[in-house]
Image (tube, rainbow, N blue to C red; front, side, top):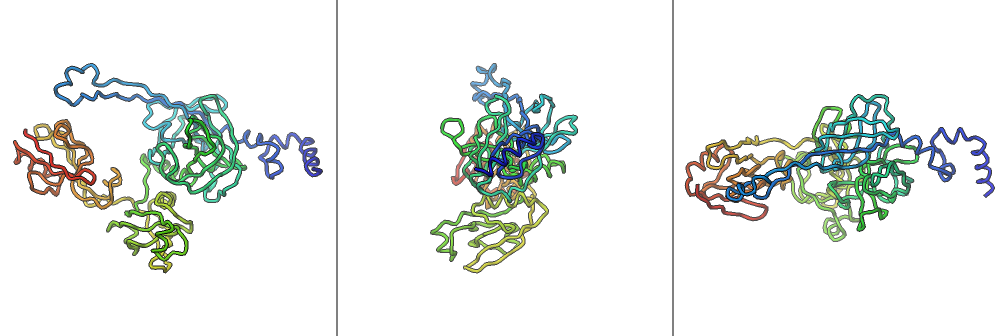
Length: 457
């Protein structure tokens, strides 16, 4: 008690010092977060996004009902979204959530001092739920420095800054409740998160999660809730991934490029660890491996258990992909793994999914049997873009076109044969259809099902 009274006396005698610097000790932090907030808050912005979407009539492709519902074919509808963002550089680079600004036609960013800027999306990714924006004609902007999120520990104090429910900039405090959370967040994001009990509510999306030094450790993205409000379980995207997004945006990338693993893995639980001769559950066991996978190139095999990436443990496929993503394409990662109870290491090249064999994408022209039908050969790049299993081969339907849709084709179907004859390239489909007319039978694969589609032209 005596020490605390002395500390209070010292701080009261030097008010200017308390107002102009970030707290540097636990004692100072326990008194007030005000100096920290005063320094960090100007870099957290409100984002107002507007997008125009076309509502499509369910009868748009039906030749009979289309005439009856001609007035309702397509109507523009304006969607507005509200969220937060964080300025990361003097020249106006801002990070936010994809679900706040993705596909927006008009983005307005409002600073804490009420200045307003128009912004444009440089790079966005729905899967990671991150977007990098550039403020127009911005300079000398307040900004936050990034802290390496791998140095964050459970139990650290953390502040969440954002604009919940549109009431204005709000600060909430808590701690880092957990690390390496994967597969638990709601919304679009799928991956690896920092968990915090600092209250996060709708409108906080894209806001800052900072440490007691005012550095950004994560971007608030989602919560677990039954009521719609904060229940003390919020998730932030780690700053290490934000740094990789910013780097790719500055390189001129418009899509986030992830390294390709070319493998399917599963977490190792207690039962599985015993059968794999592991002393403790942990790691990711390789269940399937593509021949072109960089893991296969480095000598790994099905049944091997990946334990660490760059010296950090991985216990889920999402966590391993996160580690690869922050390393970046063109780099190499050190992998520790187990095989038959023996430890081993390997260096894995971080590569983009190969676009080989060539996809040979084609769209059948007007006058074809199925005009508008778009097809491509399946390769690692195509499977990544469409979220397909890595072992698939064949010709995939990218767009069935109006007549293909009426025949029963859907995007993602794999075309196996036409009238009993196998098809191997997209360019031969048009010729095969013309020869097969007027009675056509398409053998397709949809997921795990084989379908026969018969129709006349």
